[in-house]
Image (cartoon, rainbow, N blue to C red; front, side):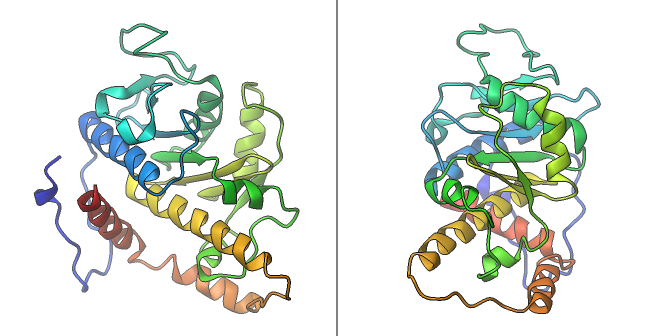
Length: 257
């Protein structure tokens, strides 16, 4: 990708521009960049957790990381194309170039198979995300970042390491129509109709968790906005310019890389 060719969205944008369906090569480049951004913002867990993206076309294939590659070193060729059974599509050694993590396949394939509107799924195990996932009330509506997800966040109860394919149905049911979910006692999941939107969703979900852990450690009472203000704020984040904002963030993030 040539970063100089990425247009900056102007202040007069009113909606996301209509984009042609990306090629597999472009998806690979963007997904590898997203892995590196997740590493930059310290949302990694050694070689565990995953980010996946749907491969354009009718085959229901998607890309996921080759197990054992650290996020900060991810390259387009380190992404393995698999089908909905978790089997690599392209030839390669199942112990090296084509090795994927079974738990990652279970979680990501569940979302990709059920939600064709979502092009990218991010799963993290950050300390603050796990901490919020351990709280009975989950993410509290106490910050502007958290209000992005007000009544727009699923919760999935912990069932052990996600290697049981039967869990996929329950995971998707708990996600519902949302683009983000707290995996109780486990971590966070965020998705998007595009890779830029998935990045924005996981970034702000993580920041909301960070702020909550700090706010609840103070010992005094918390201030909660009214339910009406919470809903109004969530709707503001759904404005027609939301996707243009995601594209603007993504362009800036690529320049950072």
